[in-house]
View (cartoon, rainbow, N blue to C red):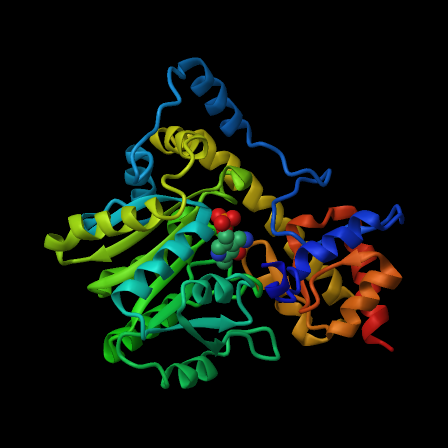
Length: 391
Ligand code: PMP
């Protein structure tokens, strides 16, 4: 069998992380992986998550198997958190998944069963794993552009590309804090996406990986809620990885939205059948924690707001530092972008210089994790950028 082993290039992110770890320079900076970091560079367990875990440990009475759909209260509370307490809640079928990645793949598998000829449209640049997740289910993927040269949403080019989409295709959009650009559509632009989906009979598929990291959770969900309100059929993948810091607990949901209530039971069964043939059922711990937090969210929302506040403070300080140094205009939109990521307008070679000469590690496409930056490191990054672009 091993003779048939294909040559595979591993994920560049993990390869770079290996290089970062091996780098002996004391002043090295890791802007690679998309995790929240505090001012000390740690990715802490949230205090409210720890409290929930202590409570759950005391209450625990069994590790017996749960339901195929996972934790029912978690599913219900997450659907409410994402969709808001509104009529569209009646139109959802939700199942607990292995993070948003699990939800993306589960929905891709569902699309492959219901409509195998659908093309899934993803943004370029976009989340590095969207294509493998969709293609892994056997689906065809096409791209629409996202960011223009000035660091803004390239809305005309985006809609021009979507003209080629056919009825039944799927439009995968990031709900907020677009990865890797940090560029989110305005509500008017969300309305345009919604109109386009209706006009061309395209199915919206919204990936909500960062709710509460751009603005408050309801504001971050406003575009998703707008497009859902207007559509008879849609998909959602959502995650607790970032907003609860439950990364390695692999906690998320897949939601199918349809106004056809008679088909809800069949959809739920089909989702469960797909996961049953894959990993049977999702792990419990993360969902139990999330469910506990969502039942009484006040303290967690305050903690989440402090995370969001730190990322935005760093973002604004970096934007200001670049402005003070008269960096070119295309660098200054960093201040207006949202969430953990932005794309530095540097070439792959310039990103390599940033790494080799200045010990600052970002992705080859220019993506940096703003949350990975400490306030004290902003001058080091600004100096490096100004040095590189002046050559
Ligand atoms: N979608 C996007 C846009 C992401 O950035 C990520 C992870 N960084 C995911 C999905 C996957 O999330 P999870 O870790 O919950 O699987």
